[in-house]
Amino acid sequence: MSWHDGALPLASAAPGVLLVGNGPNRLSPGHSWAELLMNLQQAVGRRRSRRADGDKPFPLLYEELYLHGARQRQVPEETLISLIADHTRDMAPNPVHEQLLALNVAHVLTTNYDHTLE
Image 1: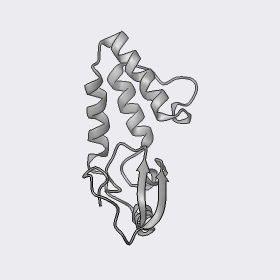
Image 2: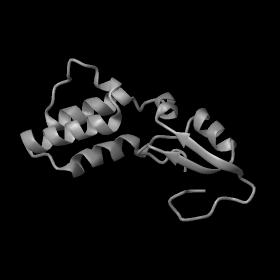
Image 3: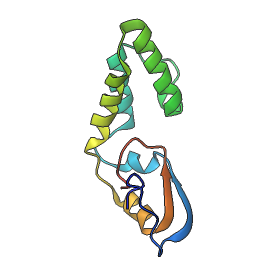
Image 4: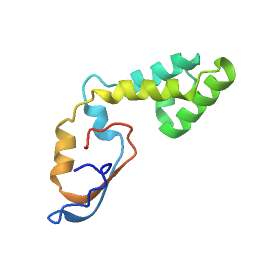
C-alpha cells in the first residue's frame, strides 16, 4: 500500500504509526549519504565545511546548500531536487525495509525523499 495513492489502511493492519528516518536507507548498497551530500555541494560550488556536514540534519544542510547555490551561482532549486531524485530513484528496498513493512502497522511516516517503503 502506498500512502501517496489515498488508500485507507488495511483492516488487518495493526493500529499505530511507524516513524522511519534515513537509517534503513544507509544500509542500501550503492547509495551513500556522503555521496549525495558531495554531489549537492559540487552542484552549488560549495566546499565542505570544517564541521562534518553529515552531522547536520538534512533539512538544515539542504537549506544552506540551496541558499549558497542561489546566491553564489544562481543554481535553481530544481537542480538540487533533481540530484536528490536521481540519487534515490533506483534505490531498492533492503532487508530492513522489508522487516519494517512486515510489522504491518496502519500508517508509515517517513522523512525520506525516496519510495523504498512503497
